[in-house]
Image 1 (cartoon, one colour):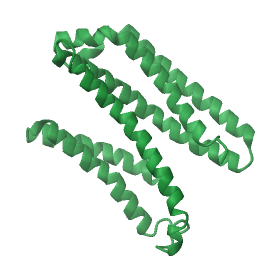
Image 2 (cartoon, one colour):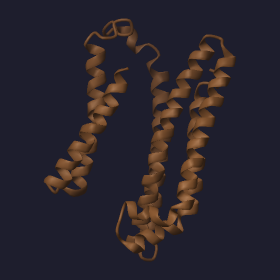
Image 3 (tube, helix red, strand yellow):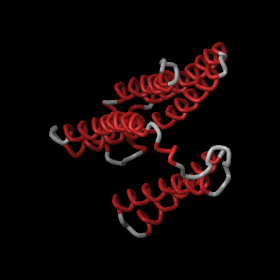
Length: 222
């Protein structure tokens, strides 16, 4: 429930700070990054206050030495997970770097960045389904109700595929106009249009594999 309040609050704060830093203070990209960092901290601070403020007494009883039990296995899992997440983010940066060596690099990087933003929108939407299905499957398997877990998997995969197909059609039908949502430069928009088919299939595949990842993490045997 607390995340249901903190997430919209972080979004509203992000929009407000972006407007102040970019439009009013003319800080440009540093201002946009500052707004993102400050709004992201709202979720962390909010959860910290919620836990330590006594609103969840059944799960937080204070600091004890038991908190350090099995610390190293958890640390090992954390490091491996961090490496995977870093690699996922770094390969976008590598692709942008490679685009910088192409002919007419400024246009290509701009077009590529637009495509990455669209994919990121779809990814954020699907990662919500991924988190939801991972929790749902874990709960149902914990109850020993495998039929409910299978039904939940079918529902969330069907929903994600429908959303992916919707955006796939949007990218194919309006691929020649999508670029103008981000820029008025005709060359950049034309470059985005040339990538629209690849973008459409990337969005479609991304909507499926993200949800399947959430299912896998809670179906694999321990």
